[in-house]
Length: 208
Length: 208
Image (cartoon, rainbow over all chains, first blue to last red; front, side, top):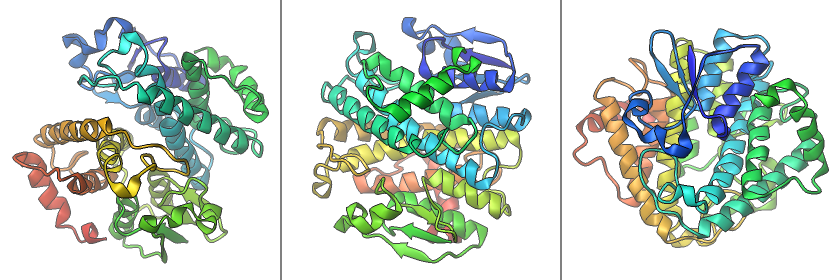
């Protein structure tokens, strides 16, 4: 297996953290998103959606989407369990993962991609051009702040996002909180979020 | 268990189709989204995110997000398997489900909610007010058309979205294609998509 990656980008970092928590190392191929390598012929042959991460299996099968890649790795390398310990926990991990992706990652991406010069006509991920919309900069930021408040309130009652074990939901949330730095949004006075962020950032996997 | 539902809405229909394919019937509580019941005190006590579907377990635990609900039901009632037959298929189902949610359902919702009078200041799901942005009507529609083309090309080579079995990915795609009718977008000349849509619509579960 090998992982198509981009070190500075948020989504592939989720997979690198996942691999580190499993104690796995995979060969990585860096895709230079800033230079537009994802739109080139060579990378499109691997993933026509022009996104990373992509996991390529030994038989050449290419798998996209962070959740799908992590789920595959979880089945092939089940220990430690990173999707939850029982049916309800696994459902909760997926519930929070979905919420963090849409209300966190997509909101921050909305604020970031609609403003940054490097994303002109690239307001959305994927092969197609979409113009930046200045109204979405403010909307995305407001959504991200609402998300930070939601996560802070939730973490007042639980050590990790789902119960007492570190899971995929924590990885997605960690990457979202760090990605928010790209729009200069920080944790501020949210003390539960700060306590959790210190704990998950102290794990060796956070450096992945 | 009981399901908080809204008959006309796309997301809870995915859960109803899932239940029908499993041969399960659950008590359903209709939430009148058109009347704003999801923003009222009673429903917020069940789901503060103001969205349906919500699955409430016998002990009162409330679970939101379609993927999480379906995954829980899959674990409790594993037959027939609707998330795929092996590790790679399960990953593919999650890959396509994620893609259909973002590139299909969210795109169509973008076109619909930013135009419809009933969604004034409700351009996004959830408890918070967001103004409609007229530019997103056209963008959402264009994204939905790109999604239809993608799905049509994909279905040229496969009977169902993932291999030779009907899965959650087909349900999400079916609901997305039917939801596109709300923005007057139809399958048109896309013949692979049309062949697949006839097949999945003919299943008794499609009426759920």
